Every structure is written in structure tokens, then in C-alpha cells.
Amino acid sequence: MVGMGLIFFQLLINGVQHTIIFQIKKTGYNPGFLTPWLVLNPFCVITIFYAYYIHALSSLDWLLAIILGVGFIGVLFAKTMSKRK
Image 1: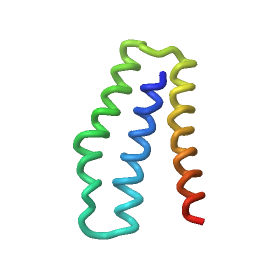
Image 2: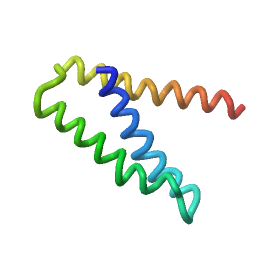
Image 3: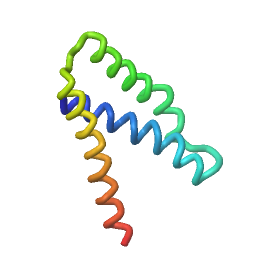
Image 4: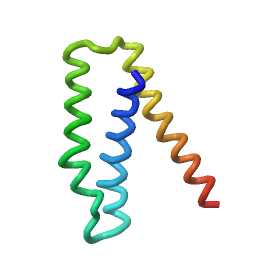
């Protein structure tokens, strides 16, 4: 469950932040753009589908993994915002 939470964390942070948000803020070459699309996102998606296909996690485990992944993002966001002030 904890591992799947980290998979969701990687998918959301690297898949959204490095490829969409950073590219909107800064035009031009972004070294963090290709790695998530070529390596991390496919790995995360394949891992999620495989875990779902073989029924590796129960419904409660999936829910807790998503909450844990979003919780990691919330803690990271709160820590980043506290450093900016």
C-alpha cells in the first residue's frame, strides 16, 4: 500500500508538475520534460494496471494508497509554501 502511494505520488508530481506546470511557466528546453514521459509515467501506469489486474490490493488498500499519495503531495506543498514566506 505504501509503495502504491508513492507510485501515485510520482505519477502526479512528475506527470503533472514537471511536464505541464513547469512548461507553462518557462518556455524553451525543460530537462524534466522527457524523463517523466519516457520513463516514469509509463512505469507508474503499468504498475497501477498490473496491480489492478492481478487484484494485488483490496478496495481499502487502493483508497489508502491514493490518500497517502495525495498526502505526500500536501506535505510537500505545505513545506514549500512555508519556505517561500
